[in-house]
Length: 118
Image (cartoon, rainbow, N blue to C red):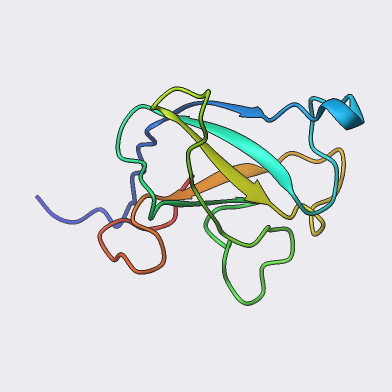
C-alpha cells in the first residue's frame, strides 16, 4: 500500500442558514459586510474554528483568490442550539447569483492539525 496523494475532507457541518434580518425583511445574503451565517456543526466546531465562502476551497485564502470572503471566527448566541454557530462575513467580494462553497477550518489559523476544506 502507498500514498495515493488524494486528500479526503469529511465535514461536521450538517446544515447552513442565514440570520433573518427583520429590518431588511430578508432571509438571504446581500453583497456587503455583516452577513450572518448559521452553521450547524454536529461535532468539532469551537471558538477557534473559522469559516469563509469561496468559489473554490482549495484556492481560498491564497493570495490570488478572487472570489472569497475573509475568514470569520465562529461564535455562539443565546437562543440557538449548542450545535449552531454564527459567522459574520463580509460578502462584498462575492458575485450575487453565483454559488459558493463553505470552507471550514476546525482549528483556525493557529492550528495545524486540520486544513481549510469544504
